[in-house]
Image (tube, rainbow, N blue to C red; front, side, top):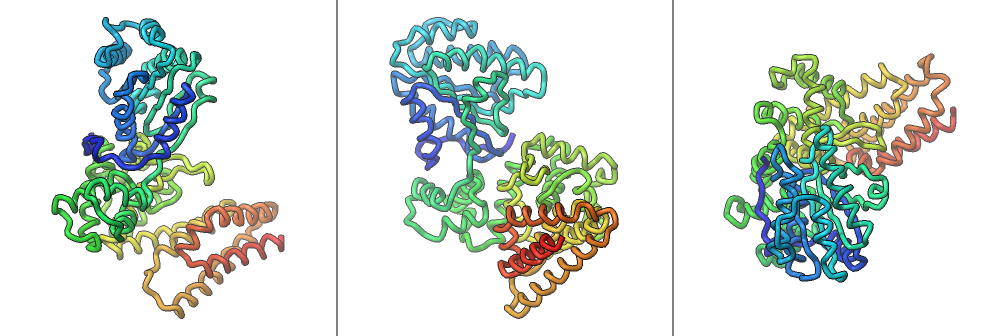
Length: 465
């Protein structure tokens, strides 16, 4: 299990956006909110805070289910026992409830002013990819959630690593699905105020810079300062070592099977460099690292290693599907934490890895011209990231000219490919679309002037076809 920070109502801050959704749903006496997000994003804290907030209100019975506590067998019985015990604690049931129908009947006898609040945490532990898990999820929503939803007397909040698996179309249509977002610098400042009563300082921005608002990481750094493990946030090396130990290894790495944890953490760092992720891409890139002298897991010589590695990363819910680019990718906040951590601790290695990724996509443009639009945008990103930030204005201008010349050469190579003659117009249009979608990120890594020049070159190409 990953390192958990025990919930404390005195140490909870913000999340007002989501709390307001619940408040509105309770006012309307009906609601279905499905929250999801990577481990450490604060889902459990939010649900526990809602339980604490509403448990004292006599007209809102609260039923809380933590799916991590469910036994391997007789899970329906365990859920009913938990609900029965909670209702007894709230003075709402005198005898044990042994069926979903009995639960519905018991709650149905409450005064009409009562609105039931169901809080269901860690829904990924229902394991809906198994027959038993699908049956349990179907029973939970069809026999309990749906029964109350029809009567407009219940609000249900479900939280998990992925959006909940709905078997009922009507519930699927009614559910409001929200990804739990990272903290903003303002959220971090509120947490600093809550925990240490600190006046506004640059600290919130510094913490955000290292964690990208990842709530578990934010709390790790604040606690490191509170308890004397970190003297100064400006000591980025010291901060990076704490993030490596207590966030990457202690939280994210704990999602992997113990016997493969070390190897998978190493592969996760490598995967985080890539914005497009599959077994072929990861395997090719890793072998380039090996040829450049990097030490890889011994098992990586096996052909199926990278397929299994990607599956393990998916099972840990650290990788998700990117609809815009039609590819898997490391979850963005996690990817940013990993790449920033590597860049701070080992900047030369970081630039070396980015340079090797750029070389890989440069070769792929020649080998697979039909995917030129995807490979060029990735080449731009990695070639930009491989450069040191400390260059003069003259060097920056020289780099801009060099990049535009290279893009022109790449375009000419693709135009000369006999098999591409019918597809050139669509590839040019697709490339323009990809550049527009990724303008903000690419402008950051290659510079606004360089991006603008590349954009103009691509438009010229599109217009000429």
